[in-house]
Length: 478
Ligand code: NDP
Image 1 (cartoon, helix red, strand yellow):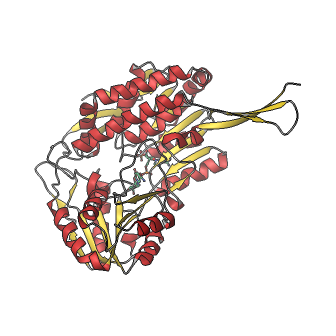
Image 2 (tube, rainbow, N blue to C red):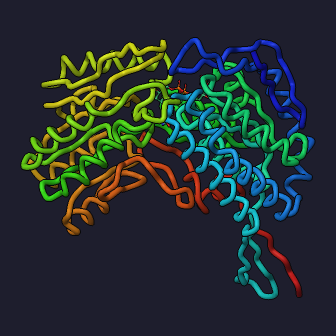
Image 3 (tube, helix red, strand yellow):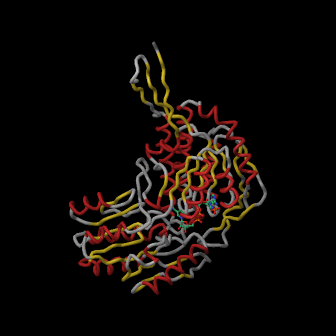
């Protein structure tokens, strides 16, 4: 069994306490054993970052560009290998695993360019002979806490801007997916990342995560994960006056109007609801369908859903991989049982026993639901979609916005007027027209409103807001 260690101060460090990383497609397959740290490991990483922070903050943009560009190139060159590892570790299909690895590569290369484009402003003062200069500086040491559902892309879209803008990093990946984070750490190390600038501390959220959030010398926290953990982190960071950025759940609506192109709508909903095993914060979990197209839409979507091949993530024919672990599968099955009580009808949703022992579930569609049901208010995070029938666009918008969340919202329509109305009135950070609610570009802002997100947006040029702090300087030249 290969053992994997933590990266602290440019060295691979073992804390003992090795934990097996198990393949959700086949629980007999153990990917490796990962050394988990604790609060003292975080303290060591912070010491290393403190020693490195001044020189990294003052490093040339060219040096930061070259490091990020090299990591981006390495991810692309080995995307088949890392994509297969991702599929094995998290349960995404091979195609999704390779696609996510390529996305991580693009993110690194985008921020390699951004490292060269850190700009400020020069303003004339309201007073004579004074210039006012507005510049951006790194925040300092940032703690990055990431979930299991995008195990290479989410660490990438936090690490790359953090380093591009001159911060030092301490990353704690999700307990379930240390391997992909270890790949990024290895690539940073192999491509000359200076000691202490990037540190990987693996371990549990309750120990390592908590130690990162509460460490007084960590200046900012970027977190993606559940609402409960996010609220806890916000509370601690608020008291400690730490900069904080939270990306949490979604209960994303996809509206299908009578005038929609049926094949476009079904394809968008099939992808948005079930692909990546529904384990995306941007998944379309509420399908809000106008009554005229309802029956045809349900017939076609359920037919295509039932034809999806659920199987081992590493099999190229698989379209829906396993659920990430037993706990998540149990939670999905509980929601499906609840849907049987709350909704009119449930199609699919059974636990599947395949050749290898894994966490397999048939995709599920809940029919005859209304927006007040728990299945339509709580994030399920599995391959499950609810259909809510509505009379018109006005009711569709009202149902779409009647949620605690506000990450992504979609509409399928051939009416420019309806699309425009929805785009303007949807209470969401991202709006999709004739596209799945999931699936975004890497060079534009990502994030939501209401209960979904807190703090500045991630990704694209907007990432500069979180990973830098602004300084205003006055120079008297009289
Ligand atoms: P968590 O919020 O528990 O985990 C996200 C990250 O936070 C992990 O790295 C976790 O570590 C860490 N963490 C946990 N507790 C603390 C803490 N007290 N202080 C600091 N860090 C902590 O989510 P889960 O991964 O357990 O998933 C649970 C649910 O969250 C899912 O079913 C889904 O509904 C939602 N979710 C939403 C995501 C999104 O993108 N919106 C992504 C993932 C999950 P560890 O893994 O070791 O527990």
